[in-house]
Amino acid sequence: MTVVVIEPISSGITYLNAAQELGIDLYVFSTDEGECSIDGTMRQKAKQIIKIDTSDFHSQLSKIVELKTVKAILPGVEYAVPMAAQLGNSYAKNSLEYMAAQTVRNKFKFRDKLTKSGLSDIKYALISYGKPMSLPQDFKFPAVVKPVDMAGSMSVKKVVDLEELLKTVEEIWTSKPNDIGFFASGDLIVEEYIVGKEYSVEGIVHTDGKITFASITEKLLGPEPYFVEIGHIVGNKYDAQFSANIFGYAEKVIKALELNIGPFHLEFRVTPQEKPIAIELAARLPGDNIVELIKIATNFDLAQAVLSEYLDLPYLPSIEKNLVSAIAFIPQGNHRLFKGFSGLDKILDAPECVHHHFYYQADDELACNHDWTSRLGYIILRSESEDKIRSFVKHIHEQVKVI
Image 1 (tube, helix red, strand yellow):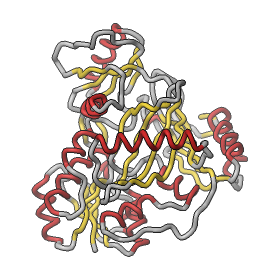
Image 2 (image 1 turned 60 degrees about the horizontal axis):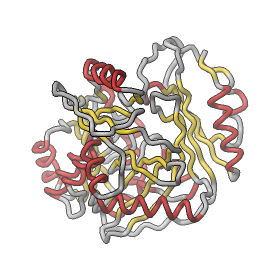
Image 3 (image 1 turned 90 degrees about the vertical axis):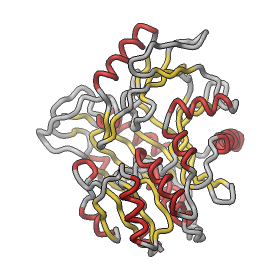
Image 4 (image 1 turned 180 degrees about the vertical axis):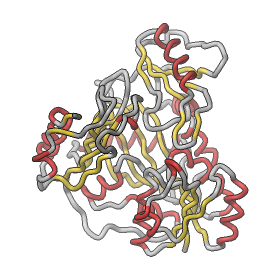
């Protein structure tokens, strides 16, 4: 029994561990260079790394046919979602429908679909490169403008009026956003700003139409006008009414988008009136180590569950946990050269600290983008106490400094 994962450089990395634990052969399709390089540890967990043009449908389909035993094709990164669906529709028994994949990958199509389904009531508009801008009647600022096809909060910005919107649009077009070899089309969406606390819901759509919700994840954001995620908390004890409201809304979104199988990562805000409004949905495993956070908090392995669903295998966690887990990222602030961190001494030695990873070494130059690349590393935590987790996360964000 064999699966293919296309470019496992983000959330898709967790499939390699899950496949090894389940005894499943996993082939990696990757350009395997630059930011898409597969590191040594991960290489050992794959059946084979196949260097291939992951934007070429026909060459990948030919290789899948040649392998003969492939039962599922999965995306290892956001930009591979449509390709994995297209290949799956052409070859595999279980596969996300290609039209659904295209809808969730385009933020304008996503908002349009939800609005027409009655699940979103904010006003929005498509801004096409080189074409006149036209906003809906009674459009209200502040608003959020972003590329329709990027990920990781890249080129996402809050704007306070029309003048700032026009300026920001030109800045985005001039910068030509790109990420791991994927270049933005130039189309942007501007939509009214949603006031409220931000969360995500993670889970899996089963082939019989049922949905398993694995987590409500609290999002911790950096300062506006940008929307850089600087932390996530999993395992909070929400009251039954709040959870039912969120899961009920998420189920309606998933059905409106016609997701027929696989993982989902739905981001949304809950307004002061306790109304959830979706921001976007990714038809893939969540990034930012959220798969690990869910497993730490509950012992539910979302990557194993997804592989099992695609391969028609049963999945039941051996035990259930009842912990709170979190990841706290360290933002770079205004620094342009990395020298190190201060304020870490007691944190890394604490029993609540699971592990950490820092991306830079002394004297490395830092990027100046206001997106995921502005984070310098992370610390993962776990505890039976939500208050203790929140205290640690707050300490990291307030006391750990970049030298």
